[in-house]
Length: 487
Image 1 (cartoon, rainbow, N blue to C red):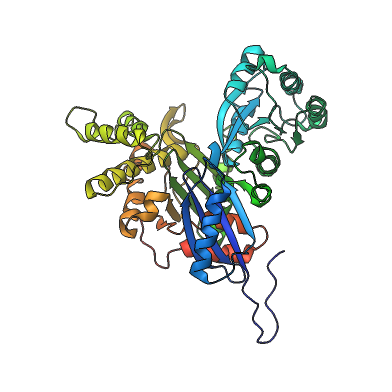
Image 2 (cartoon, rainbow, N blue to C red):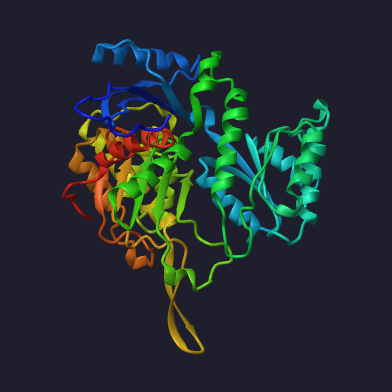
């Protein structure tokens, strides 16, 4: 039900609470929201019960929030999940630099982690590699509308044949659902081929209807639908029917939707959110495209105004050593013996070996802060576009490629470490991610306001946006600094 218009006279609507839940890989977070006002009533978190049943963590949170509010824990629940490895997507398309690139960008913005990319016609070797990546879902793309259909048809047939492979040859058997987002001329035919082989298939609009134009939203919606209908239950994360009923999407997808709401709410040229986690560092951005840049036509696959990147080698626990390696490679650290890099490398290996490690001493916290600064800086540089001077017949010119974030008005930090640090220190960590990047030609935000999602509301905003847009906007407004500190 959508938010109702204000009532007549002096009557005030009764408070209506919705419990928004994120089943994370490490912690399950809950936010109780009054959807008549967007007021954040209470929050809580509990270690995710991945080894038993995910709903056990929710049971604890319901009890805790009931005690905190004095209410019966009978609130309607909306949830998202990244537990059990999140959403693993394989992208299959015609050629690496065009349709596969478009598909990969769309898959990443849809809340999934791209675990495999295949270009061209799938042969036996390619199918074996695809199956070995253990995807939850395949995004099948290929051809612009009205263009080549041969590769898309051949790959659909190959996936259908793989689904029919006997269980004795499990190296190439592949029965995961497929979202078809390629040449519209053969979409229904391709879906039928897959359906005849028992593969759950959903046809949507082409992600690349014509060269230079990416159409992400229909594929994002279809991936979300497949995740809810086929992937959640297949991970066997809970034995309760309620779990499948309350989960409406993958956490990163809902967070990105929350960032879209935040961008509309705060009225600035763009918003970037950098989420530093134990395994990855994700960057979400919503930026209005520059009309002048749109006319340049330099990129075969256009940059998405709403996008997300996942840096799988930048995590404060499982991938802490990779942060140090990446920082040395990027010349952010000197790898000589006796330098900061050597100390960080030892500490990072300890965190990787003990992913449940909690920093308690000031020295341990300082290491976490430094690793987070490096992760933020590396992730922002990778997400942002780049400018460089090129020399041509007409002389030197500035060439730009990728996403231009320079005019972004709000940069938000998220993640467990940033939420628990002193607010000023947390903003300093986020600001450190911008230092020196412009000198390397990276188009990172130049003078954004800074904020930290201390109450982890962006997932809740995304969960509430479809049915309670006013409440979602009010909740997102908590992150807009009144006269915020700037980078």
